[in-house]
Amino acid sequence: MEWFTNADYWLSRLVFQRGLAVLYGVAFVSSALQFKALIGERGLLPVPRFVASVPFRRAPSIFQWHYSDPFFAVVAWTGAALSAAVAAGAADLVPLWAAMPMWFTLWALYLSIVNVGQTWYAFMWEMLLLEAGFLAIFLGNDEVAPPVLVLGLLIWLLFRLEFGAGLIKLRGDRCWRDLTCLYYHHETQPMPGPLSWFFHHLPRPVHRAEVAANHLAQLGAPLALFAPQPVAGWAAAFIVVTQLWLVASGNFAWLNWLAILLAVSAIDDVRAAHLLPLPKQPPAFGATPAWYAGLVLAVTALVAVLSYWPVRNLFSRRQRMNVSFNPLHLVNTYGAFGSVSRVRYEVVIEGTDEADLTDETQWKEYEFKGKPGDRRRLPPQVAPYHLRLDWLMWFAALSPAYAAEWFVALLVRLLDNDAATLRLLRRNPFPSARPTFLRARLYAYRFTTWPELRRTGTWWHRTLVQDYLPPVTSAETTEPRSPATSRMPH
Image (tube, one colour):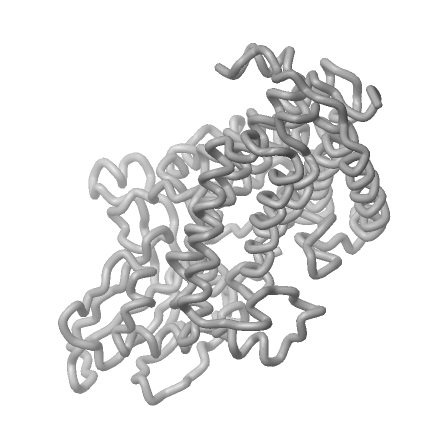
């Protein structure tokens, strides 16, 4: 079965698998440290309430059979420990029949978390990790050379990720077509990073070149992935460069790093050996077991059948972004930023410990770990870690409809000084006594200019737009009003 494998992609497989295991670890740790406040038994969107109304066939998960906070913690930390072992090479030290269950366990555990995570896990990088993680089960280890069909499925995944994102932009906001979207995007993206201020202040011709390069990376390079080497390798390398640019300019959890790993899988060892300080000689591969070849053929056929729905979506005038067509999150459709906000809105939560509200009431702000708040704070580097509450607060600022399920519950937890919820924040202004009232206000944020930064030392300038939620106590359940100037994400 010489046609079935290709030893020229051994380094690429090694980098992809070890890197994927690291990202699995980040995802599991992110879940372990944040779940209690978000989806725990007393969380904002509790898992027990969710599984009571959603059957197993729609959301397969081990938590459908049993849920408790300690059990979830065991699952998440077990996933993190297994990820660390695989990243260290454990799956290459055991027989193939033992390595595949390791990868399957990682996939099944994280699938169980995502399928009960509700809106906190409704991000494209969740389904992308699951789809890539499923294919990794069948990619083999040091016993066999990389199977050509699975390498092809990884390229097919990268193609859908990039090409889908490119098409959604061309069909969406006009600024992508006139090359002006990055006049705004670095400032209005969900989670700016420490270099985003500097990217925003690049000359406008550079911004236009950024958009043009993005179109080439998402609409041209993906087509070249199916060409023979070295064309496919250089196309993948170009995608890697553009993804590193995105890593530098913002925080998108592990999305960009996973895209890089997928692109690496399309680079053969001849080119990879020049770029990576890795062993130059592959191990002595054995013959491909018949049972393994049969599994690879079956998975390839499955992906071919399931590809019907993403392909139909790609060529639809009403293309949808980031949709799973099955509860296992296999063969999904992807896309990002079909429209770009021109103004950045932020919800600022404030509290007071005064017994009565007057015009002289002193309000103190809660600070989040990642999202903009303090105007003097440079946006932090967060990715590949994922701050789920911070991300959802960005959506909440675009429209209260995105926070209808959890925002009031968040305020109730803050009024109670709930320890698990406060661990999601950077600073609690009421460490010794609970606040008596909370309110939320909507601000328009913009990056300061160079003269403003030198004069004031602030990275952000903000202007009050309106109240988002009037003062409330723990006994009240007022819903936030919809800002008249809100922008809806696409």
